[in-house]
Length: 370
Ligand code: ARG
Image (tube, rainbow, N blue to C red; front, side, top):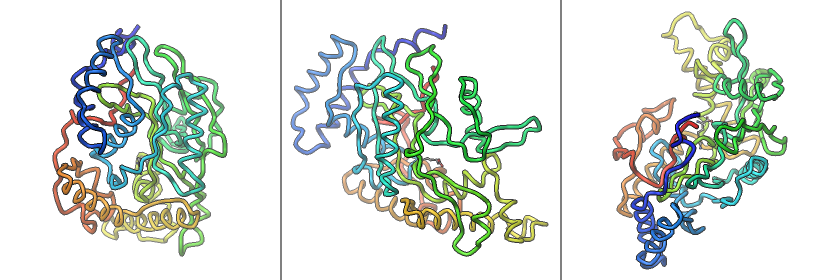
């Protein structure tokens, strides 16, 4: 048995709760004086060990958690987050069904909507369910006996775990992983294949090179993080998948290019007939740019929302200026904000950011292991 602390979530911290209620009342116009609500919350914690957010507090908390995400360049739109309040849902089958519905609603035929679905929180003696996947949609990876990968190495562990549970891998390059949901600690996760109508994908082609489509590459439309705990006012929501839309470089300069992911630069360079005999020909850089052009082009053609790193950098600086006018800092992590290609030609490269305080709440936190 793991230590009991992991099985019995602690009581909600009354200081965290009252700090949050005060922040809500200070920021939300018309929320009025916090005194009565703080009293009510503290009383509820004293009686039950925790408290229940109002729907408004929950939505505000989720949006501010996004606003506080120091690694996210896309925060200009934090107010527009669509919040699905599904705190009554805690059974694995129902979670799976509602994750599917999240993907359908967020995909919205290609006009991606930033969205979060918030499932049951941890309560004293009643831990919340967990989604084992790092994202709702991700590709499986399989390693052969020689250590060679098919698919996405980042989906290797989950694919192996799902296979152990009875999932039948197709052993392809872009197999969408099933959802693995654990209802209670110590229980085996259950697995759920994603229905086709939940996972819009984009086949990759290039605006000039017809051969590119023949590489058979694709990526999914909606990046929906599912392994972070949303913490608001001392309450933890470990199952709270959320999504925005993609910035092209995430796919073109990382997922498809990183040596420990799809590792495609050599193949693209070869098709481009680049001179790969020396690093100094910059064949990697040239292949990388064409890969990124293909990603942006393909999402555009498919009518799926995607942003580019130049536009998003401008928007982020606009966000910082807007927050500053409201008297708020924008903590940011330079190494995550600066895009992985052409950093120096985007304005986000040429400055420093407000320091990140790990105690800032509401926040999305790395999920603690069970
Ligand atoms: N970088 C991750 C990926 O490539 C997604 C992270 C969230 N990205 C976003 N645009 N909201 O899948």
